[in-house]
Amino acid sequence: MDNKFSSSWIEMRQVYDMQARSPLLFEYLDKLPTTENINLLDLYCGSGSFLVWSIKNNINYKKCVLIDYDIKLLKSIKRNIKSVIEPHLKIQSNTNNLDLLIKNNKEIISNIKIIKNDCNKYNKGYDKYQLISFSAVLDLMSKSTINNILKIAKSDCALYFSLCFNGKVKWTPSNTMDKYILSFFNNHQRSDKGFGLALGCKSIEYISKLAKSRDLSIKIKESPWQIKNHSEMDKIFLNRYILDTKKSLFHMEGIDRKILKLWYEQKKYEIDNKKISLYVGHNDILIKRK
Image 1 (tube, helix red, strand yellow):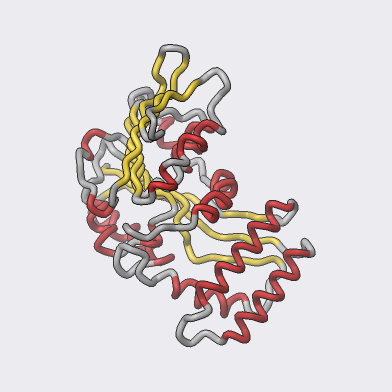
Image 2 (tube, one colour):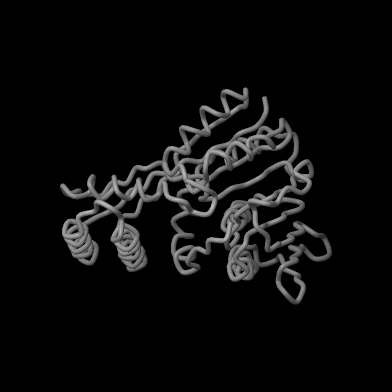
């Protein structure tokens, strides 16, 4: 996947992603005999937010391989991990900060290998892993990409798709333009994002039906952003969210730019005056062979 996503946007959303992630993975791991020898493959890892969330929640993987195409994001992973590990733990790294060890004195807690590669073409040694993670990327995928991914599902290796956008955006209070803007936004999400024609919010329904047709076990939980606009950070994020929405829709065929501009200006006023909150729907999905 050659598309590069804004590092500032990824950094801004990380705190809301951390709050949104569901307990689905905890429930899965609690049923395993042991979690001490789990190897993680994190595809489209970005700045490592899934691993960072795991570490913050005391989930440690013996071996982690993180893969993404954007070297700038990959080089921020060490810093992001360092911000959440316990004070008594240390990070040892090579000069490129792409091979990391998390250590407790001389004991190695996690061995982390960070690789710059095109995840669409990566197909090495899936049988080495007990968990394969895809964060905030399912809705960008095409049917063929999802078809190929489900082929690697096994009984001893779960596929974990987290923070999958489900098409639901609710502003409180709402206005008459919200449904109009959301319909265009959901259509925009179905353009090519680097995997072929994206399914957008339809990806959840598609992967559910496909998993069941292949007799795979699938579990789904909600993991929404719920942004109350109670802090300066909330205000900055919400303003970025509506600005990016406006920019992404501005050149869409059929959009009424006057309505788009009016929607943006009204939302900006309400955000700046702390009169509005935002709900963005996501789902976490765990798939494995029965």
